[in-house]
Image (cartoon, rainbow, N blue to C red; front, side, top):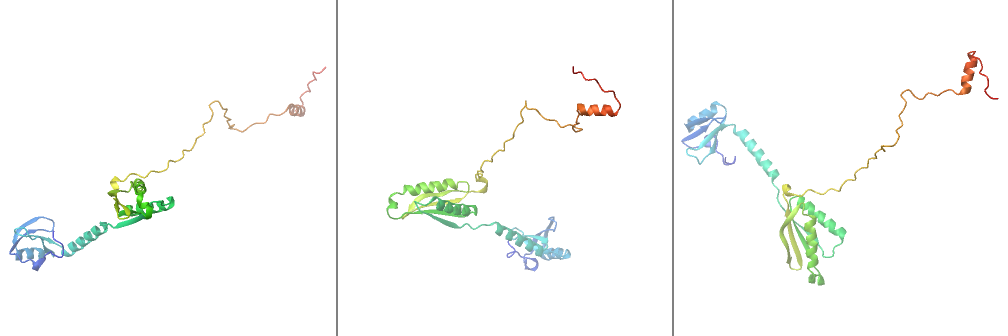
Length: 231
């Protein structure tokens, strides 16, 4: 269907006869333009030309205001999904410190995650230009560190006094899962099979009376005193 700016509606349709599609998608047939307009007006709807190149042109009976609203909504949604790719540059030195290297690589990772292309540039100064292999080793390290989010589009090559590498974002479906540090498994102590297990008494421990206590209880009850067995 043509865009809303190009669509002809109602009296702007200047064709002797058109093929009419009803509001529910049913085929009404080929009608003269006046008859087609009357058909739409009876239903308080618009006659909208949806296929001007057909023979005869096809018109549909619909609410044109609602149609424009839905079309604009679809266009805005499509624009939100569009992403304009930018080219970002990360500059490195052949003898870069590890801390600075990590800082630069994280910038590159962030750019790739935002679906931007990243140009890594290693600039040589003075006698460093005689040892380009140092720059190649550095860029190989960059590729390895960022292989989960990007891949090489243009391999490393010399441009003047600089070694240049171009990386592009890797599609989400093809990204390697990030490696997570292995967790430390908690140790579980097993009780010894031969160890004794102390079972608590259900009724609590009962203290047994001593021999002296029993004698006192017997005397109080009038029991005869037992003679001593000592010689």
